[in-house]
Structure formats: C-alpha cells, structure tokens
Image (tube, rainbow, N blue to C red; front, side):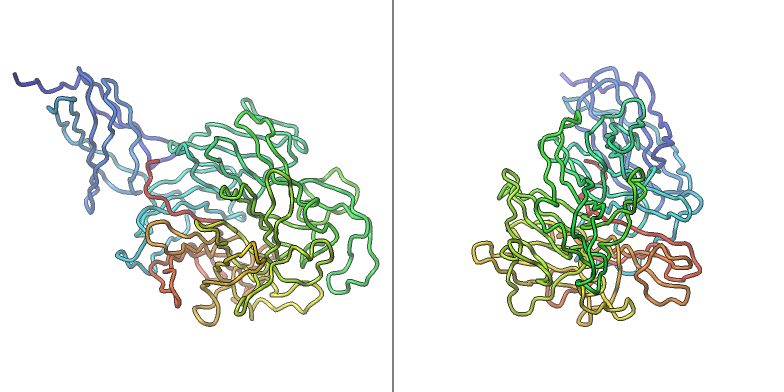
Length: 514
C-alpha cells in the first residue's frame, strides 16, 4: 500500500542571525518524522544541503550564503519510507558586508589543482578596532563571518565549533551560529570575569590554543621569574648583566571545566639566560603591569602542538629562533631545531646537526608536526641572524614556508622543501603567519599575513611604528620543487595610504559544516 506523503504542519520559514549574518536558521514542522534536504540558489550558483536526522520539529542552521544577494531556498521533507513534500521557494536576502570590510581580491585560482574546501582566518585591523572571524570559498567570496572582541588564533575543534584566542586572558569556543558557547578565563593577572566564565589557573592565554581529541585544551601561557645574569645588550654579549623580570612561555593542558592537567615551563627546558634579537623587548609590560620595572620577552612562544606518535610537545620559541621538542611525561628536552649560535652546555648537546643544503629559520611561526614526523613552519626570517651577528635589514630580507625532516636517532635535520626567497618569489612578513600541509592534494597553504611597509612602500620590521602599513595574502602552492602557485588571495591593499589589515593564520577546512 502506498505510503502517504508527509505534510507541513508549520510552513518553512527563515530567521536571520545577527551574530553570523550569513548563517540564518530554517524552521518547519511535519506531521511525521522526516529528513530535510535544502536547495539554496543565488542566481549564479545553486547547492544542496542534506540533514540526515529524522524529526517532526526541524530547526537547521543554513551555511554557504554570500553577502548582498537575493537567495531562494527550497525545502524537501522526506519520510523514512521515501515519500516527500517540497515547499514553495522562500526568499532570503543577505545584507552586504559590514562597512569597513577590506577588499578581499582573488589574484589566481587553478581550481583543478587546489585543495577543496573553504578557508577560515581571523581578520584584524587594530587601527580600526575591526575584528572578525571569516570563511571564504575558493573564489575568495565571503561565505561566513562573525564579529569577535579580538581576532586571534582560531581553529576548528573536534566538535565542529571554533576555538579562538580573545586577547591575552580569554579563550572562546564559538559555534557556527556565532554564539560564544564557552569562555575560559586566565585569572591570575586579571581576576575580573564575566558570568559563566570558566576559570583557569594561568597567567595568560596567547598565540596558540587548540582542543585535543580528548576534549582537553592545549594552550600557550606565560610566567614571570626573576633571572640573575640576564643580558642587557643584544650585540655586546660581554656587556654587564642584570637581574631581570623575565617572561617565559608555559605550555598548559586543562580540562573543559578549567582543571589543570599538565604544565611545562620553557624556562625549565631552555637556557633562561640565552637571548635572541628582541628578547630584551617589553611585549608583556601591560599584562604584568604590577611588577616593578620592565619585563623581558625572553622566548615569545607562538605555537605548540602535541606529537601524539611520541607523546611529546613541539613548541616554537620565536625569540630563541628555535623549535624544541619536549617529552610530555617527563618534561625532558629531546632536541632543538635552530641555529647553533650562543648555546652552552647542557643545552648545546640537544642541538640538531644540519645536513647539507639546510638554511636555518629565524623568528618562525606556526611550527607543526606532519604525518610521518616532519616539521613544517613559516620562517618569518627576521634579521636572518642571532646575537651578536649583524642583522639583515628588512628591505633585503625574505620569508618562506619550510619543511624539515628530523632524524632523532642520529640527531640530524635536513631541509626537504621550501617556498619563498630568490628561487621562488620574494615576500617578507616580519610577524604572525602560517604554513599548513593540506591533506587531499599535499599542497601547502601559506598565510603571508603580516606584510609591513613604511610610508614610502619600503619593507619594514616594525608593524606598530607610526606611519607603517600592513596587509596580507593567502597563497596555496604545490608541494613540489619548484613549487607552483595554484591560488592567491590579497587581503587589504599594499598601498601605504590604505587601511591596515593582518591575518594571523588560516586553515583550509573541507566545508562550512562540521
């Protein structure tokens, strides 16, 4: 006997969403349990989204709309036996992007060679107090955005939400409706909290945080110590030393309820009196405002990843020009990947020996462990020297994405791939940035996110200097030698007279839906 088609007991409707304006909510009800299939068209493209769960009361988040367009949305509700009913098309117009949004310009697109998916990045303009999380598609069209207090490092968590660093003291979990689901607060230096905050016994959150498959969170934090014998001069290492207020990085792991699970101090791992260029700077003065005297930014960690294969932490220490591996269970230093200048015993015994053809990284960002164990990072290249060697000026410098193969048994390291520099193209971003190996094509997505020029358009090392200008690029290249560029997007404008923009990192994800 034929099974009757379902009936809409409440007609389909679309509710706009102020928190994430390109992510409205579809609602309807049917007389029997049904699955929803939704077709969205905007005049130039059409796509289908299927929601597999059977229900009579439907409430679905719709993703993939573009700004400033008229869309039609058609709903088909299908019961388990296969019969279905289709709604009349619904009209939904998306608002244009917010005033002040930067130009996001597609420069190159080789669709056949690209990694499929959408690209997530935090979009930031401190001069404009403009901070958003943004998804774009392969044509550089914005397909999702949400305003946030601070556009810091942002990753997709295993549960599909986004984990984003908010300033120096807060870590947010944000869902695709743009709602803050959880907010963790590092309360040792800033005791003020908001209702519902989850307290974590840490000084700060900064630069890097991610939710582990276990649900725990791994993050970079800091600590302050008085260190005797700390250098006072970057170029004269024989100058008198001092007892200094040294800020070092601390890797922390904590449970979702804020309970501390583990803590690893880099001041206990690496020589606390060794400095690199900018280790004498006062980056943390504002956070440690109650301390008498200036602070020293000894290490300026900017990345931590869990190497699950060896149960170890791999940490990028920018001001040390070093990436280090640390045993998670014991805190033992396994190796140091970086130039050999000014390391003393016992740390010097942990230096990896470079094989022929290797060029060291300087002031790097975003070190990560690839499947198979290689290390990929963005080599910002600041100064191309460690104290007291002569610093390379910005106008003669370059950045690159680079991959290293570490032989832990032999304590050697080989450079196996790179992109950037005279052999490829010359670009220089002295701060932030990222490089990711993509899982389907093997391509590398490079976030060239911190380009800096002065008022004359000359490259500079000083993003915060008065009159200087910043802009960003996203570049995808093949993992070949030589590499081939397959996608390029410009964010902002290189013109020094235009507004400044930065992109801390970017992530290519298979789609907008988790």
